[in-house]
Length: 130
Image (cartoon, rainbow, N blue to C red; front, side, top):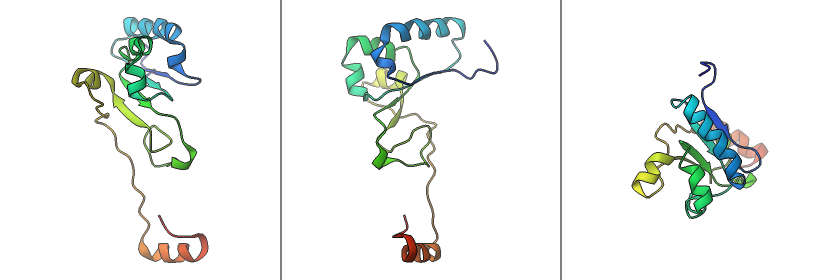
């Protein structure tokens, strides 16, 4: 119930490879502070999680899932709450209810804008502008 704590995030290693341990923590947080959102980051993708009964038991207890491995070649520093463009921010309750992946409605990725004049200078020295 600490007002300085915004919620719980499961990450590091792979939370879905330690379902029993994570369930204990998640259920304790849900009981103590049901209003606090619970996020999980996983290298697994949604379909791999929901098709496995054990992993599904954990995902059913969280609010937001960031799925997919980080892929260095797809890195983009402008993405919100994730490192590579293959990763998705999934609204778990809505996805479970609808039977298909529903992306988080508060997602606001930034876009990169380089005016043409700078792109020409950059292309001459560093390669094509993005």
